[in-house]
Length: 353
Image (cartoon, rainbow, N blue to C red; front, side, top):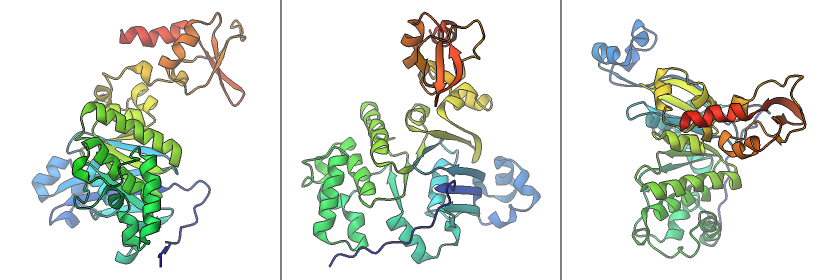
C-alpha cells in the first residue's frame, strides 16, 4: 500500500513571508557562548578570532523570502553564504536567532518535526550531485519519495513526469556514470522537484560545471521557476549568475549582510565601495530598468509616444526608444510614471562603449 503521510501546513497570513530570518548568528568555536551578549560581539571577525578563538561565520543576519521568490545569497569564498543556507535547514545548528518557515520557528523543531520538514517541505540541491551510482536515473529521482514510503508504481510515475520537466526524457534507465555533468545535475534537480517541496535550497549547484553548461542550467532554473513557481533560495559566488536568476539578491561579506535588493538596485545603487567594485564590470544596460532612466513628464512633452513597462531593461527598450519620434511613456497599471527619451538611453549605452 502506498503511504502518503502529509505534514500539516502552517496557515500563512496574507503578507507572511515563506521564510523569515531574524538575528541569525553562527559562531564556530568552544567559546561561542562567551561572544554573544558581551562586548566581544561588537568587535570585528578578526578581533573575535584573536581574543576568543572563535570564527563568526554568520553575523546578525536578517531577511525575508517572499512566497515563490528566487532569493539569491552571494559573496566571495569565506563570506558565510554556504554556512547561512545550512543554518536555514539546521544542517548546521545556528548559535542564535530565528528561522521561521510559514511562521514556525525551525530552531524550535524537534528531531521528528525537522525530519518531516526536510522530507516534505524542503529540498536541497548541492554542487556535488550526490547521486546513487548503483541506481538508475528514475530511481535517483524517486529516492525522496521512496524514503517517504510512496509505492514503486506511484513514485516512478512521478519521477517520469519530473524527468520530462527537467529535459531528461528517455534517460530513465541510464545510470549516473553514463551522463554528462550537466545531465547529472538535472537528475539532482529532478530529485529535489519530485518531492514537491515548498522551498528549494541551492548551494552553488553549478560551480563545477563548464561555463556553457552552467549557463544552460541557469536558464533551466529560470524556466522551472516560471513553470512550477517554487520559493527558491540560491547560493552563489558568481554575480552574473545572481543577476541572471534572482528576484532579489543578498550580498554578504565576512558573515554580514552588505546589501539586499533587486538586481537593478544592486547595480544602480550599490550600498558601498565593496558592492560598487563587485558590479563595476556588469553591463548596466542589461540590468537597469526604465525606473532608473525615466524622468518626470513636463508640459512640453508630447504624450503620444509608445508605452513601455517600468521593469523593461535598457537593452530591450533601446530600439523602441531610439526609434520613437516622441518620448516613450513608462506606464504601469494604466498610470503614467514618467517618460524616457533618447538621451537617457544613450547615457547608459555610451558609458558601456
